[in-house]
Length: 188
Image 1 (cartoon, one colour):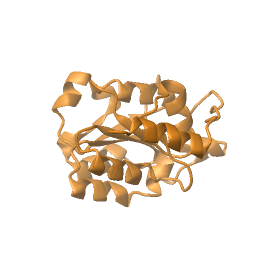
Image 2 (cartoon, helix red, strand yellow):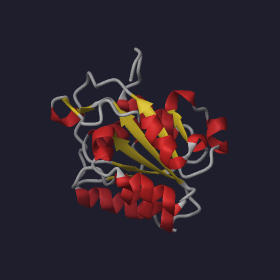
Image 3 (cartoon, one colour):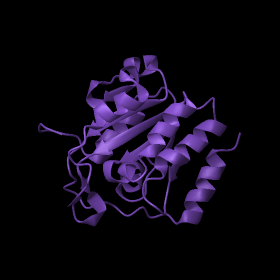
Image 4 (cartoon, helix red, strand yellow):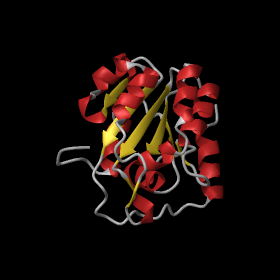
């Protein structure tokens, strides 16, 4: 995560969503990923996961399996994804071509006063390439919408981000409201 001028978590999420021609379903982890997804690109196709950390990638896999003709993006924090690292192997094995995972790597648990994650020194790009293949895992800064169209799925995006200088906004939605909006957007 070397270098300066890293994007914020919100800006990285918005940039990842901009890679798609059509708005994908976006499944975000509990905490700051859900808050910044809502803050940067609130949409009924967003599923703000609450409950245990690290489940966005697993929930997104299930969604991608039942919505095979639509793109799904799992929005994962580095600390949360570390709690469910095996989901990446499951995703790769399922060969769900309509699924991508973005790991937002700032090396801290943003919601807990910047406590360092145990993965703060992990090379997420190397992990993603080992699991998904070198041709399916890229740094967000190296992607364009044109390039994104050519990358075989399942795919992984690694976004090195700056720790937030803003207070993480509150989600402002109850689980019942999230569920109702998502069910409405999910109707076939």
